[in-house]
Amino acid sequence: MNFDLTDEQRLLSDSAERYVRERYSFEERRHLFKDAQGFSRHHWRAFAEMGWLALDIPEALGGLGGTGHDLVLLMEQLGAGLVAEPVVDTAVLCARLLLPWGEPALREQLLEQVIMGEVVLALAHQEQQMRHEYEFEVSTKARAVANGWTLSGVKHRIFHGAGADHWVVSAEIEGTGDFALFLVARQTAGAALEDYELIDGTRAADISFDHVLLPQSALIARGDVAQQTLETALDYAVLATSAACLGSMEQVMALTADYLKTRVQYGKPLAQFQALQHRMAEMFVETDQARSMLFSAVRAFETGDPVQRGLAVSGAKVIVARAQYFVSGQGIQLHGAIGTTDEYAVGHHYKAAVVYDKRFGDSEFHLDRANADLRLADDRRLRGALYA
Image 1: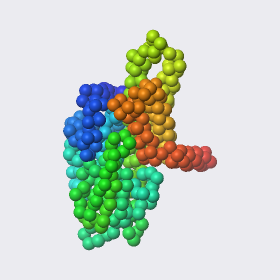
Image 2 (image 1 turned 180 degrees about the vertical axis):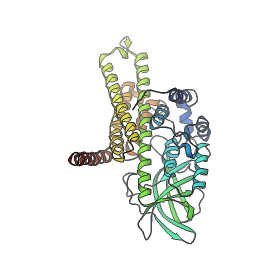
Image 3 (image 1 turned 120 degrees about the vertical axis):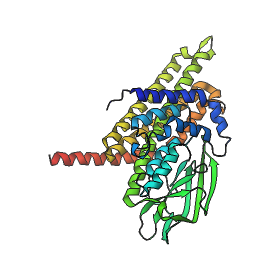
Image 4 (image 1 turned 180 degrees about the horizontal axis):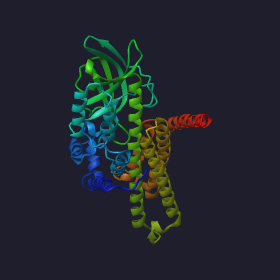
């Protein structure tokens, strides 16, 4: 796979970098958290005007049909600015969950609203007993009734749940045991919400559904199609958030390098101390390894093989999480006390690392998943050799 940037990809990356530098300063980001939604609808509409919300949506549905490489280039720049807006949750994760929806007119209408920056979507999947989003056994129940469905259950840790206009809710269909995905509007009667702030300043919510009445058209997908759609969408979300982490690490290194060049001790800049140079070199190595794993995942997406995709995505998640913890942690250490303050950006990058590590499956889960996919891939190769 050729990773040389095209003119369009350079324009995408440069425009995102310029937007973050000129219009999304660290102080601007801190100001956003005073809003009850935890992000800015003004920036959200600006992202739509830039075409970013259409990037991962197929051309046939009104989007730009960008590649995984395009998505990585965008998210790397947004991650450098610790962008709080739900680009991944709405325009990647939930947009992909809508693809198998058997209501083409409703699907195209909602995706158009996403592209125009008119709505925010959030996945309501996790429950109290679940360790991560890749589990599909849910206790929320959907019951078929005349002309529709009723939905009952409680969902936890819904990122951007309070700011969303619609939720994509997972449930088990009573009587069949089928896993299913439903679209639920924010103002639907019977849905009660409690939101709270996360460690990185963004917001999440718990939502209870008490016999919520939904139309027949609210069913997006069920059975194997629903599970496969969710797993694929989660893998794309991991790819996007991993790219954001890569941008975060690059920004931490830039902030730290600037600080070491200007902070003077014993009559010379800290950057001239060899021990600190070695630390910066280690930060660079960790970031470079993370980049390699990320682009290995991009290549795996291009193959279309779900086993190779799962193996590469899980491997990238583990390596990137480890690297971001190390780089942001070293950034704080090299800054000293100022690195721990709320007024300085480097500590916020570490908080972003904590959220990234725990979301979409932690390192322990992804190590287990990668091992299972590796055994499956080896078994495939063995069978291929036997029957060649």
